[in-house]
Length: 316
Image (tube, rainbow, N blue to C red; front, side, top):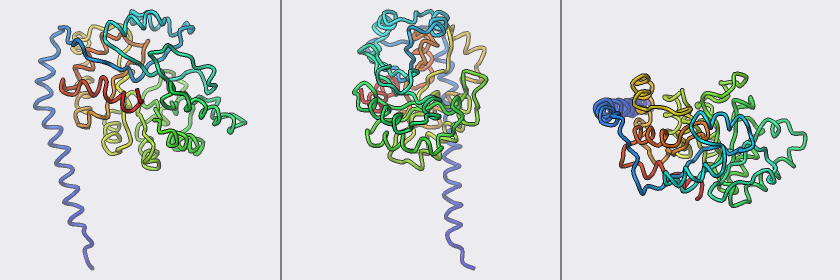
């Protein structure tokens, strides 16, 4: 019986495994040194660098968001957000919509754009055409830069047929689909729907749609890295990794294993054009978040991660 290229397949597989090993060993050699250099506790913020926050929430009338803003030493107001943006050189942000699909519900300050969020009401709607028409009405707006899905909360895989017309709209308007991936905020959500591996199939089925894996699939970092690296149409943001006001050098000392692992799998991807700075504001303090992301990302890649990628992906 002839051997139809199995030897070649094994060679390719072996070469790819060696590449993965080389990447990991390179990080272990150089990354640890960077840990020692950057965890001194000094202010590592740089001036004159533009920033876009690719993932925040803006619901100033919501008492819950006000409560978590206080923990991060912010106020859940437009005035406070403007002041913070001016302080840190943040030129814009992408609001992950928590206001349903009615376009009239989406009104934001001029420095913010938004992704229309498809919540449970959309999934169970008896009039899907009306709901899809509303989604499309949002996408026609210049300040609507994408669609946001919440599979863990809505208990539907991103490959569910209910989303197929949504992906077609995203393709038609050339706007990305951001998806909550990883840990959920509430115990009533189902994690199996928000595991980053579930995004792989959707990305393969829809190669002409750009997907954004929110939160880098945390805490499934290895799986998230594999999906981001494998699929050309999958990007990611680094939001939701921190909560409240922190002392980063102290936190790094306490949770060194986690932060080393996070940095390892970001480095493993070696595709910094796919990563975006995001905070999940008002969940976290902006100054702290900038410091942490600068620790995670090599300095030569800061401009991409903090600004250029979000500008390209969300069309600022």
